[in-house]
Structure formats: C-alpha cells, structure tokens
Length: 152
Image 1: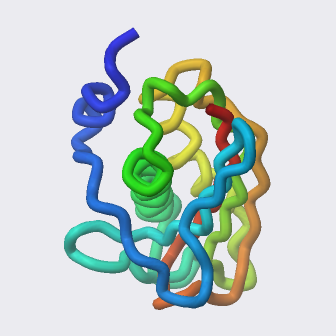
Image 2: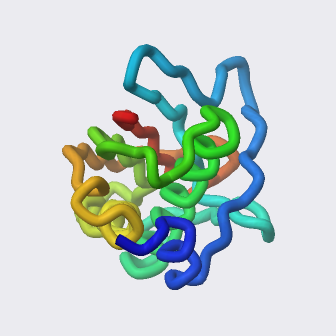
C-alpha cells in the first residue's frame, strides 16, 4: 500500500498543524488502542469554511468541507496522539454534523466527502460506521463538523 501521507498528497492535501481547541475540551483522548478525536470543523489555512447546506452551499461544496474535517482529524491523530497514519488499524466510527436548512435532507451525501477520503487514503482501514445529522448551526459558523473513533 502507498504511504498514507503520499495518498493524502494525491488528493491535494498536506497534513496541517492541528487546530487548538476553541472551548474547554481536549482535541484527542486515547484509551488503550482507541483514539477519540473531538469534533473537527471544516477549516483550512484560509480559515473556517462557513455555510449552510440547502441555503448557501450545495452537496459538492459540503462534501469538500467534510473532506477538510477528515484531514483535520488525521492531523490530530498524527500530531496530538503521536500516531503515524500507517499505524491506524481502523477508522471505527464517524459522527458527521452538517449545518443544514430545514428542508435539506442529503447530509449522508455531504458525509461521503470525509468517508471517501478516509478510504482513499487508508484503503480498507478507512471503512467505518457512520452517523450523519443535520443541525441548525455549528461552532464558528462551520458548514461541517466531524468527530471520530479510531483503532490503533
């Protein structure tokens, strides 16, 4: 298998420095062989990707925002938990929160942005259980927020 960092680069991403928490929580907790990554919002070096699906964002834009959340999750695993991506045994579970207009019902398609990136970078180790929810708003006006449970 190709190195996960190289695969990430093939998707056009570099692993960023992790974002500091914006409230009273820790970004990563590890117990045994499980890493719990706190919710990572849709952000990159340009700032927070803000918006609301079904209002001022479409599914493709939402999927791109979800990809950014996945990249930020990987950054937390590497930099805060000290675990190289090639030591991940399985992405176990994602919870995807999508800022949505009341009539928007394609949160599952937005979540595919993150899911597809994890599988693309990690292969079968990136396959996971998942829940996707529409919410009225997210911290800092983010379009998407995702937390993760990861086995190492």
